[in-house]
Image 1 (cartoon, rainbow, N blue to C red):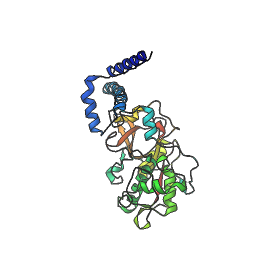
Image 2: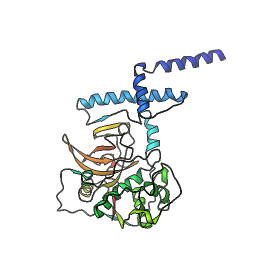
Image 3: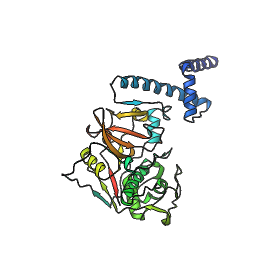
Image 4: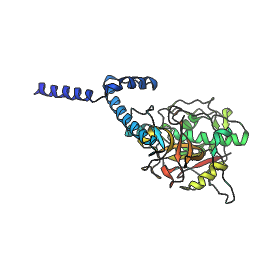
Length: 331
C-alpha cells in the first residue's frame, strides 16, 4: 500500500509539472529577474502556476481592450504571482472604526464656481514623486502626507516631502495601528494634536512599525484641522479637487483587475462603494476618449499602474467608493 501511495504522489507531482507551459520558461525567468523574485524549490511551482493563470487573464483582457470592449489594460506586474486573496491580504488596509475626528469640518460647496474640464495638480507642483509603501499596510499614511504636501505647497510655495514613518510610529493614540492599518483623518488629527509632522529626510521610511521618534525641530508642516467631503458625492469631490488641491480618498481595490492594472480608465463592475480597503490621493480629473476619470496616485511605486497612477471611472455612481470617504487638511 505504501508503494502505491508513493507512486500516486509521484504521478500527481509529474502531472502538475506537465501543467506548466514550458514555452513560457524564458518569460517566467525574465519576470522573476525584473521583479527581484526568489522562491524556495517547493514554492516555485505554485507561484509559477498562479503567474500563468494571471498571464492568461491579462492576455484575454488586453485582447478585448484592444477591440474596445474595455477602457483599460492589464500587465504582469510585481503582484502577478499572487492570487487575489493573497494580494488583498498583503496590500489592502485595515478598516478602522472609532475614529477620533474632533477637528474635522464639512466642505462647503460654492454654487457659483465654474470648474475646469481637466485638472492635474502635478503640473502645478503640488505633488511629490510616487512613493513605495512596501509590505507595511501604510497606504493611509501616504494618502495623508500626499494631501498635506499639496496644501503646504499651496500655502508656502515649497514642496516638502513629509514622513509617513512619523505617522506609523506615533499616531496610535488617535486610533491608527501602524502597519496593520489606519485612516488619513486619524493621521490629520495626530498632526493637529502634535503641532506638526516631521520631514521625510529627518524621519525616513522603514516599511515597519517602530518607536515614535518625532522631533519638533524637524517639523515640515502643520495643520489647523481637516475637511470631510460630502460622502458619495462625486460633484462635491470634483469641486474640492479643482479648487483645493489633491484630496485623500479611500477606494475598493480588492479586485484582480486593480491588482494587475497598467493604463487606461479603470472600470470594475463589481467594485463596492462601502467596502473600502486602500487609501489613495486624488490629484486631478479629466476625460479620455469620452470616458470621465479621476487621476489617482497610489503608493505602490512607479512599477505599478501608469507610473504609479491610475485613472478611475468618474461619474458612474461613485464607482469603487472614490467619493465615499474623502478629506483634506487645513493649513
